[in-house]
Structure formats: structure tokens, C-alpha cells
Image (cartoon, rainbow, N blue to C red):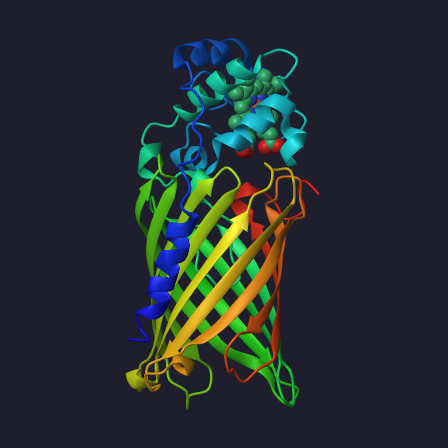
Amino acid sequence: MTFVRPFAFAAAVAASLCCPSPTRTEAADLEAGRKIFETICAACHGPTGRADPANPAVQALDPKPADLSDPLFNSREPVADWHTVVTHGGPALGLSAAMPAQAGTLTEEQIRDVVAYAKTLAPGSEAYPPGELNFFLPIRTKKAFPEDEVVWKSRLTEEEGDNVWRNALEIEKRFGKRSMAVLEVIHEDDGTDSEITEVEIGAKHVLHWNAARQAILSGALVVAIPTDSDESEEIIPYLAWGRRLSERATVQTSTRLILPVDDVDEGEFEVAGIMHYVWADRPQAIFPALEFTATMPFDQPDDDDAVQWTLLPQVRVGLTRGGHVALNLGVEFPLSDQDYNTRYHLNLLWDFADGSFFKGW
Ligand code: HEC
């Protein structure tokens, strides 16, 4: 069955890539970490991780330290980022120099211990998916991690006749412990008409994650509402999965159904997958990736051409030092008989949980 083939393909790719789990560092000494925290960090961060606004030392700080005891904040920040900030100081990730570097004061091991302890300061944070599983946003593959993010997605499709330029503004907002709401407004310009063509609203929920295996699975439901009343609304459920394969590679896949409300037979099924080469820790800024998509319209005959394949090499370019504003550039090539030649993608993303758009350039 044509339907099954992309699944088999995705499974084969995943299986062939499946290297051993990420290398685990030695367990940190939390008791040693606590002592260091109370001696050095508590002066500014408070012994509980929450800076005391009545403390004159804290009042002198601008900006104020973030609340390390807030489970949402604490869970979403990857340990590696905190390790970088504590070692090299705030500016290493585009934060304030008021967060002092500890490299001259503490050993590598002590920094590991104090960061591990800082991670325990938010009771209840285990109920939130950890920031380690926040893999890079792909161009086509759906992402599993819930975000506070604004993304501008621009796509130019080269076709016989006029090219079509499509722009989407997507706003994602977390709610609850592991959910996210999304609103997307889509504008298209085909040389003749230039108009808002669609609005999408939806929600995503993290179904499962495994911190040891560094894997995450989410389910989502999106409703697409066209502005042209002759066109059908679409219901779009999807599943998204991601996993870190090694220190240098992450893989993400998603499966999606696009169901027109007026005529479900006109719908399609889509599988997409991507592998990112994470060639160095941040603040390195350029991360190449290779993505594929396979789309199957429901009403196609049962032969090979019923599946439309595309290949989408792309690169993520971090613009700010912490990478909270980034570009994603890609070129999409149809591999089967499709009605366009090439598509050029440009995504600009701003993770607003990590601060203002203008911070850290
Ligand atoms: C002199 C005051 C001061 C001391 C001492 C200090 N910090 Fe900070 N820290 C700050 C400030 C201010 C910020 C906020 C910087 C910003 O948001 O731009 C911060 C931010 C942080 C962050 C948040 C990074 C993020 O993702 O937003 C972590 C984690 C952190 N500090 C850990 C530590 C640890 C661990 C120690 C002790 C080894 C420590 N700090 C010592 C002032 C301090």
C-alpha cells in the first residue's frame, strides 16, 4: 500500500541512524552544588533561586535575575546553556554582564555541580518537558516541543507562469505544563492577487517524553479557515516526534492528515522528517540539516506516482548570541512529478521567552 511506504521509509531511516544514546556525563554532586550556590550565587539569586527584591544587592542589578525557582523557566532552559552562562558569564549567551563568569573561580566539576543544583530549585518542574528536547524548528516537519515563539515564514514557489509568494505569521504561546496554542495568518501573492488567504488556529500537547533517551512526542490539532468562502475549512491533526541521536545529531519526524471538511476524499496524508547536524554547542550559530517530505492525496491511484516526494536541504543560522532570534534558509526540490519547480524558504524565528527581539545581537 502506498500509504504505508513513507512510514516504512521513515522507520528505516530512524533505525539506520539510531546510534547509542547520548553520552551521559558523570552524576553531579548536588550537595557540593548546594554549598557553592549558597556561597556564591545566593547573594544575587537568593537561596531559593528567587531573587529577593528587598535585598539592596538585588536592587542594584539591572536586569534582575530570572526566577530559577519558576518551574516553567527552569525546565525550558537546557543545562548546557546554563553551564555556558555560569562558566563564561551572561554575555556568552547575550545576557547581561551582571551575571558574572565563574571560570576563574570554580572548576569545571564545581560548575557542573552548581548548575545541577540550580536545576533542582523548581519543585514540580519534572511535569514540564525539559528544554533539552527543544530541537530546532524545521521548515516542513512539525516540531514536538511547545514554544513561546513568533515565526515569520516566507516561501517563494517557482511555477510555470507566475511565481507564488506565500507569507505566514505564526504566533505560538505555551499554556499549562505541556501545551501550546498557535495562531497563523497566511498571505499569498501570485502576481495577480495579493491577499490574506487563510487563518489557522490550533493547539499542541506533549503526549510523552523520555529525558534519558532524549525523545519527545506530541499531538496537535489545527483548523485552517480560508478567507474565500468557496473553499473548504480543513481539519489538520498531526503527531510530531523528536530525538537526540548523539551529541552531534538530532532527528525529528511528523505525520499529518489534511482533511477538507466539505469533502474528506480530497484530503491528503503527509510524512516529513529531518536530521540536524549539531556540529558544536551554542554559541556556534550555523546548523545544517536535510529534510524530506512525502505527500499522498487520498484519491490517487495505487501506484508510485501517488506519493509526492520533496527534498529540502536547509541551514539554521543563529542571529543573536543566545540564538533566540534565528533564520532558517532552505531550498525545496520536488523529486516526483509536481506542479512546481523549486521552492525557496526563509523563516525568521524569535523565541520571545528568552527575551526581547533586540537583546543579545
Ligand atoms: C552578582 C550577581 C550574580 C551572581 C553572584 C550570580 N548571578 Fe546568575 N544572574 C545574575 C543576573 C543579573 C542574571 C540575569 C541576566 C540577564 O537576564 O541578562 C543572572 C542569570 C543567571 C542564570 C539564567 C540564565 C538564563 O537562561 O536566563 C543562571 C542559570 C544563573 N544566573 C546562575 C547562576 C549561578 C549558578 C551562580 C553562582 C555560581 C550565579 N548565577 C551567580 C546575577 C548573578
